[in-house]
Picture 1 (cartoon, one colour):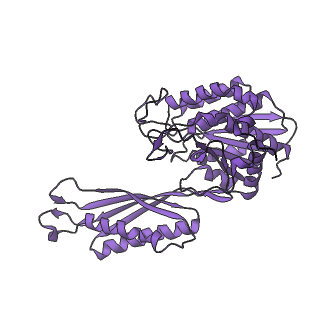
Picture 2: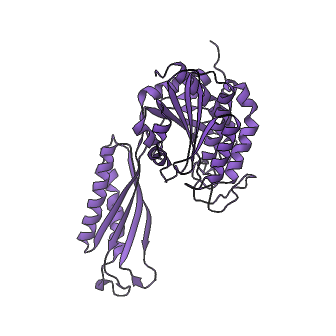
Picture 3: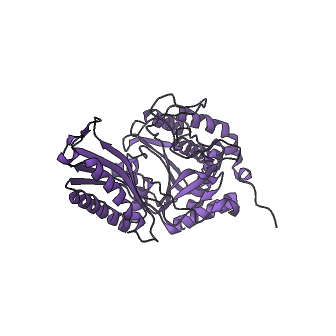
Length: 407
């Protein structure tokens, strides 16, 4: 039996030759991170590159988004490929030569790499228009909580740039370098946030009997919320309720009037989300009332779950098998409780969100014995996967159009 090729052997030679340039682009973006809807420098870099390669380029889509359009042949089919551009509001603590030049801004999720990979594919496809149809290159702003996908959709993305399907890639530090992960149906969770304001009665800390302590009430609410997952959830469901902030008081000797709890809820179904939202309201209000206080709950649904379409996911996985070999394809890959606004695209168009393994060799730095994860202040994108991702994008787009969109 013939051995499967290594991932490196399956990279398109022309893209492999551009590895150093792609790395330079990625590291330049990393050094100049921009937050949601502030990606003016990054958007200009992307637009300048696309125009230099002769690609029809549109800017200002969804405020700071960029769309490139490649056409060849006479085919009417179209496929969209998406990369995100924004950074996170956090300070980088690593000592990289290309570390962020700005305190409070950091590419801690790999959007710099996603942008560079799609640019690498765009350059190749512009040189070799051996496809029949249209490829839409979507460089999106504000994925990190800003809902940039929805902003681009609301700005007419799919009306102005029609597509038959849309695909996205995210690097995954927990998956082996160069391995692709696919999953039908939900792959990433919904993201939701809640604020619970508890109002008691303030008093001197030496006379607690004169007041109603909102801190004690809040502590009871935190404990009771845990039962929504541990005792009330169907064991076949996957969900998370995490209280991440508890704010109360300003002095050592004063029981305050109010306490505020904040947190996040992650689910993979709307039914579970409905249950948890209702449960949080009931628990907070009931516990507070029982202890003589009042609770007001604000619940905000930020991103829906990312739900892949089975046909497009099976197609995307087959492209990966043909490109890198079955040994480097994980299907189904694991559910992840992180969230992504790619979910908004999948509510409008068929498509799939793909994981690309970025876990470096065992000799690389670790965080508490694990590979440094996304959203960590020392995270850095693994540049070794840049040509792998760019090659995959090229192959997926070419095959989607060659099959006349049939998946």
